Amino acid sequence: MDIGIDLGTANTLLYVRGKGIVLNEPSVVALKQNKTTVAVGTEAKATLGRTPGSITAIRPLRDGVISDYEAAEEMLRHFVRKAVPGRRPRTRMVICVPSGVTPVERRAIVHAAQRAGARAVHVIEEPMAAAIGAGLPVAEARGSMVVDIGGGTTEVAVISLGGIVTAQSLRVGGDRMDEAITDHVRKEHGLLIGERTAEAVKLAIGSAAPVEELSETGTFTVRGRQRLAGLPHTATLTTQEIREALNSPVEAIVSALRATLEECPPELSGDIMEHGIVLTGGGALLPGLDVRMTEATGIPVFPAEAPLDSVALGCGKCVEDFDSLQRLLKAA
Image (tube, rainbow, N blue to C red; front, side, top):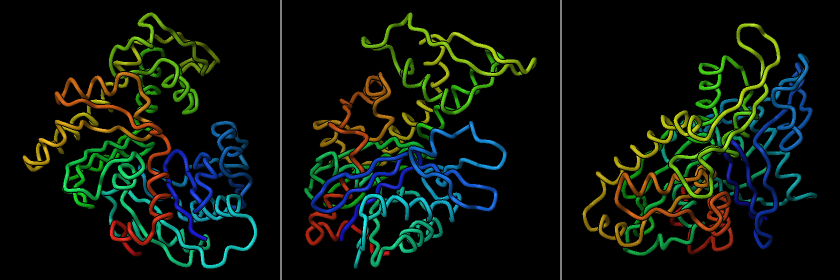
């Protein structure tokens, strides 16, 4: 049994050989005070910010790496059981890690996979998996550039001949954008909102640059608690103010893109200029981000066909065609 896993800060996706992506659930675990698991995935996400004192909803991964080891292990085990019920003899897992992880962080991810039932664990760097999943010719002597914006990290990489030539791993992603919205609403409107509300604002009226599909006069009403009075209250947010709130994390991602291009060998720069830059991950869905990046670099930028699934599909291709793609993997 071969499984490819995109263990993400926001969502975890499982790809089973011969079946495709069989599971896509939020990376959230709800625990009792005695560490007993109450809910995992979609059920647990519904409890975020709404739990009684005896139950805690936590996200075991922060910034692309494991922050709560036991919860991550329990979550992975639950997802594997759900995706592949029954006995799983000789399970081989291909799991992705951010390109900037430390050896300790990498070992934690591998160990959690082994405790979840893997007999053999192979590791692939996230930008490489994203590039494979987006259909880029990673094995050819041609420069391909991918920007993978996940919940916790942004990975920018130039790939050629099956290897990463130059890369930047940035601990800024969808979560940081949500935090920027939360901070803005607290400072400008004196209102405290939760992370689920901030995410809803981002999805409804968030953008990185003015775009046709999003009305400049668009508004979104949020409910929260007044910072000073402590009473429930509402505030109306506009498209423009949310764009300004998101400017800091978006600018950090654009700066990482520029820095990676500056380190790129001239021959590969020409290839990227010709073929463009591919955006993957949930952040690729932020309206206007491709426009902002094109303006900053002068290179065409476009989202992958299925940006949310690119990393999982890349892991899946390694699982399906293990022998020919094995050189792209790192044995744990």
